[in-house]
Length: 472
Image (tube, rainbow, N blue to C red):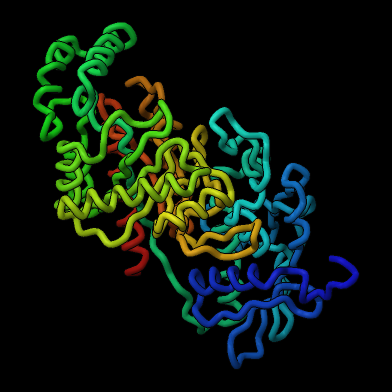
């Protein structure tokens, strides 16, 4: 804090406003948040004298994340503040965790850890602004993150700390009805390659067949011999025998348990890593129509080089809207997920806003599962560079299937299932949403489908446990 600043001015007003809206969305619609004269966060309700004061270390979270300390709060007697399944909580921003976390005084209560600045820091992705330690695809890698380096990447740390605040609020305002959420799952599919042998050129067909012969000798030779026929019959509709055509299987599995999936389609080509299909190909339009008719959602998968190109991203979004309108697909709002999960804070989110996207589902890591934003709840984006909230919602991606089952053999399914279950349970403990990306191309073999089916089975079990708890 500079000499000219007062304690009240130490946090920008837009940050206070964004955090207040977050708390109102997650906890109670009448909550008021400010920074008091002592420089602490102060939570209150209209016409109520009781207050919750939270330590404020906002300036600490504005330093280089590579120098930000991290301790661990391991309570001896205060376990009542911990969410279910937690024995302690990481404390980014402080090396030494508080000996006593919560101190109650008559009508007031003090929390001795700055969980609010932590929430802003994680969810705004402030630590990624201006970073140059990127991977070969221009992405901020999980290995460079504070969460990975300090061992809490696979924990929804923001949600866990907000659960602590929820318990404090129950203490101060015991009759106040707090907002409740339930565990859920969002299944999504990036349509990079809708067919192995269909909707491509004859030259590409021959190349794919050759690659399968040389690199994938385990592929069924009889299926390879059928490839030319599959290509020929996919002029109007992708042949159901194509090994990558798993769309109907996926939708049927979800419909059996009441899930609505999202399918993100590429609508442009800016790099050789983009798809080889055109979104207005009759077979792709037919696929979109069938997805829509079955009650599932269509989204945009902006091409490889659009994450820093607002004009191109908007062009692709407009193209998807035109194709859907021409196909009779009435979907008023569209969301997106960036191809290869390419993202730069804050440039990419501004490009998405300019393209008219209602939400984005990119923010996870390509090589590691976990909670890049520290949360498994949807939230309003915040630009930490300009210091303002943005008109778009972010749906954090918890896991992409290739980070868990990439290269998996049939005998490795148990380990993959166990890891996915741990991530699901982490979301379940904080009543969040388990967002899973599973490409249609990663359901070709029985052992891949077995893991997918196992995820759906465990999801049903967790959902039923939530229903039993709510009814109790």
